[in-house]
Length: 81
View 1 (tube, rainbow, N blue to C red):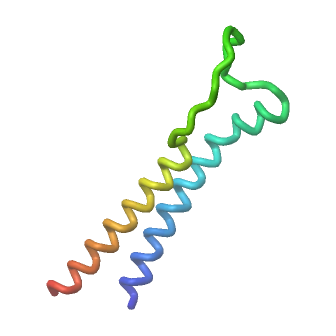
View 2: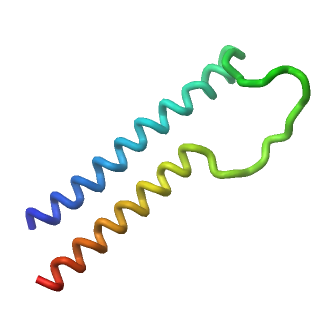
View 3: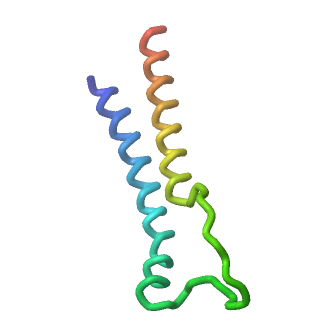
C-alpha cells in the first residue's frame, strides 16, 4: 500500500511541476491581452491563428504519458515479484 501511495505521489508531483512551468508560459499571453505588451508581433503583417498543440497542452500530455508509463512499470514489477 505504501508503494501505491508513493507512485501516486510521484505522479502528482510530476503533474504539479509541469503545471507550474506551463502557468509561467501563459503569463505573457495575459500581459498581451490585458496591457498590449509582450505580444511578440513585429507589426508588419496580420496573422491568422492556427489550431495546434501549445506548450501547456504538450507538457500536460507528456506528464500524463510519463505517469502511465510509471504506473505500468510498477504493475509489471509487482506481478513479477
